[in-house]
Image (cartoon, rainbow, N blue to C red):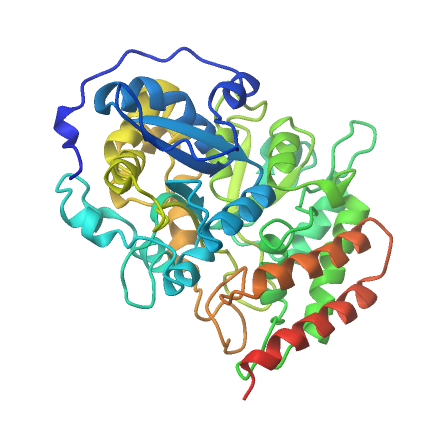
Length: 457
């Protein structure tokens, strides 16, 4: 049974560490499973994506979790694309290397259907301090299986929005609307692109990967009126609407985007925008916490946050959660849940606020987060638009036509990971100038037709 959170004792402040040091000390080797029992207590292995919120928990775990529970946590931290390859290989082949892994709203329902994950409702039910009713409904639904049970506990939830440098806008006499159109964004980018200072008009993901390039790009496709598949699984990758959206995105990046855009993903854009080297950035709402941290960002206090740009739809933000899942192969289920419970608790959010800064809370998953006075003050620039964006995201109807599967920035079928990644490689080549959008999407249409054969009747 899980250890009561009341048995945990307060722990001293953890000294600050650089990211490089963290990655060295926070990671286990990626070799054989390190889970099991040691002379001093249990050991669990955790695989997680290398985002700032995960780096924070790696810093805090030894002093604030292991010392109170006796459970040693061996972390492996990987970039997003590598994480997906690693965790999919381990879980699908029942390798049993990890007791806990971060997955997202795309994987959770599919892997639950395959029987690869422990359901977590039974764990929350016997953990009275967890307060599962406090979790945001859209996030819970995105991480639930067809049986309605929760299969991954959200660490942080997010939608997408547009971030802009208020100082650069003021210097040009520009005003950002609360809900801009993509054409307005393109016009702003043209006026703010400045070769003399090395400032890009906008930063957008161009790194191949269905969860990298196609996360923001599919939301652009949606609001331009395109879709990967129609309701009857007719593939539409080379449709006029899909093509117009991708050409807009590629042209915007090539004319006013960051240098080396085809190799820039979330992390690269976070660093670039955080250094003041881009006037705008369209990406995850979860980035705001890092941007408002004065120890990690040169633009803290200078960023404005508005809703995701639109064209034909009223909204276009995505819905996502990085969440902790427990593969059915784990032999440390109770210890794994103890870690998951702590990592997703109100107690952990308070710990992050007190030790690392209130803007850095892994937010977007609990209603109560938005009632914390310190968080309200620290996150006043972005908390409200984040919460509204999460609530407005519609995975059932994200575009202008009915869809055959759920998902805003993805298609909720197992084949999409491979399809989206392969088409993203084609589009990245177009961003780099190695092919045209038309050729890239013609190849993508052929790949989508192969996928559709399985589903069309």
